[in-house]
Length: 421
Ligand code: ZN
Image 1 (spheres, rainbow, N blue to C red):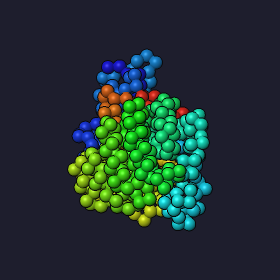
Image 2: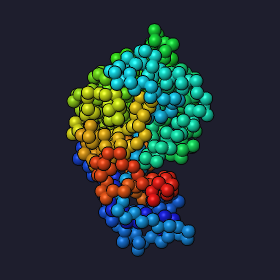
Image 3: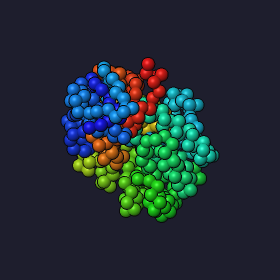
Image 4: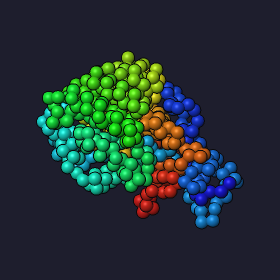
């Protein structure tokens, strides 16, 4: 067997290669660990993985190929970020003092700040500006080990504007060199022009925007924000039913501020995920488990929102819900690091370190429909790995704020060597 690159002698590799998808319950703690192991890569794909001694015997390096020593290091599959709003213009650092003084997300939005100020900035931005700002964020995510992500629209809130955002996502993906799963989130908030006529906006999404999104294949999922002051359960149900009948997958921002029956609605609709879930209850959890709807937890958002609630990670795993993680990267919670999110998942949501790694890789891939291509290290798959200077993979969540020393995307290193030496 021949390889162009051999990553030789990791202390530990979490392959997440065996077992059923999605992983639930105790299976979330089975990471498919290999010790003293190597990975051989050719043409961007893994061609062999296993004990260092066996690979040294079986794999021959192509001329011009290289072997890199991974002694004392660990690898996990490149992270999958299952929930982002990474396509936007501007920033909102100026709002932090307001948040610190106790203003809620909803209050800031009602004062024309928050989400609506990002809507203004995004509507005013040119394509070039949006691509440049968003590509910067996504490249930093890649440097932190993320090799696939979901990106939502939702900062235009007009028919044309939302279509423009969705059309930019494949261009963004080409610019940064890793897959982005586009989600239509026209139902992110009621547009400022239509606060008196929310029904008309919902109707426009259903009869005009969604059919065009589906026909032009601009999104894989349709998502909606089910919360008091945003969209009602009935509106979300109608919208997501329409999306489903057009062949789109569905997702739901559910039970973040209040328990609104969001988790149960997502399960009832057969949605791929229900996201946030800070205020969800055991009834919603059992519905999610039955439907195999992923619970996407966003613990960084709970932290930056000064929420008194903790994400119910432990409870969801124990209820056999496939738990996944995302950054929720947005101007409200500007987080680009999935390793940091795994730490928050442990310390805030009470996942075990192994569960957090599973939730950030294998189950996150499931949550955005990429389970066939992302979230594991195995023969035949693209060689996407995050390498850390730790001796056990469980140290990644354990050590707060640890960064990869190298990230491989399709077998090629993405970090400059000056960072590592
Ligand atoms: Zn969100």
